[in-house]
Amino acid sequence: MKKRYLNLVPIVFFVLAAGFIVVKYKKSEREKTASFYPLHDCKGALAGSEEQKQAKDQFAKLMKITGTNPDDTKSRVSLAALYLQEARVTGEYTYYDMAAMKYVNEVLAIEPGNFEALTFKAMLYLSQHHFAEGLKMAEKARDANPYNAFVHGIITDGHVEMGNYKAAVESADKMISIRPDIRSYSRVSYLREIHGDYPGAIEAMKMAVDAGPVGEESTEWARVQLGHLYENTGDWKSAEMNYIISLENRPGYAYAIAGLARIAKAKREYTKAIAYCLQADSLVKDYSFKEQLADIYVLAGQKDKANEINTWLISAMSEEAKAGEKDDNIGHYADRELTHIFLKTGDYDNALKHAMAEYNRRPDNIDVNETMAWVYYHKEEYDKALSFIETALKTNSKNPTLLCRAGLIYAKAGDNAKAKEMLTAILQKDTSIDELLKAEAITILKNL
Image (tube, rainbow, N blue to C red; front, top):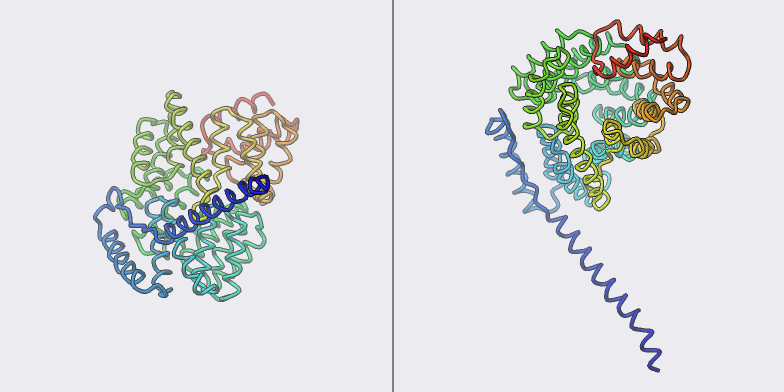
């Protein structure tokens, strides 16, 4: 008899423990549902600006409505849209994505087929680099409203990220036929760029800039992208002009400041480039500014500072990825970004690990294949590198960094004629290739 009761002890303990876990889980879910996400103050020129004041006024109004009416889906959708915009303005995607996802999920719990909520959830998935999920959600939204241009744009983005380039072109054509505006022109520009048509890409991005209100974040983002296209074609004067104009229209715009940092770097004015990067980094949370700064520190002979930044980036990105495993609202994949940082620190095994994780999610994407090729290049496994770089070249992209890396891989794989042709062509132009990569290409070319 005693043995029977003793056998019950583990079961009773398990039930009590399970009950505790359930209660704790429900409490956690209630806290998540009840979480409050105030708008953060902007930095720089936007601090205290009319734009920020209007955003805060709108936020206060929407919070009052949602707080008193739990069934008001319209206000919750508007609140999610506001959070999405603030993410773009501040770069605090983790925080604002979590906030937006909370209200999107509340709307979908009430109205599972709500078009706006489905569209925003697709955007959030793409923002978190959950590209397959984002594409699937966007297609679900499109089925509910096939004549909405915006959702075709999200589908375009999803297809690009998954490497479905033919489908991406078809979606972009559909989008622009419904509504030719800044969003559709910018997507056409990017598709032309990755298919090797830089003149066409520049033309479309100019149309995007002209279609947007001067000074708005989306317009100045498009202007910065136009500047970047000029960098890739070696027209540094036009690139610099666009960054200056962007800053005149939107003072303190971090991405235009980062553009000026690249201009200064190209001129080997490293002190100035570092100052620009530090300024951009102080205004908006975007890891790319720190990566850019680390690269400039290397060129300036300050490798210790570069190593310090890269170590910090690995830690920060890894922590965000771990946090995402515990919370569906903030799960952000950063494997491709981590790959490039591990390459810079010489940790090729970890670089390959993260590159493979990204490749397994989207094996047809040309950027992911370029990343895989570059990892194998550093590991001196040139036959493998060749296979991936040829996939990366499948859209006929003329990106100078891609072509330079391809030339180096062809050289190491023994195709000297192809390597010489590619490296000669790319080194004749003063494009945005990193100085260390360019120096390696020059050395290899001399020995071909």
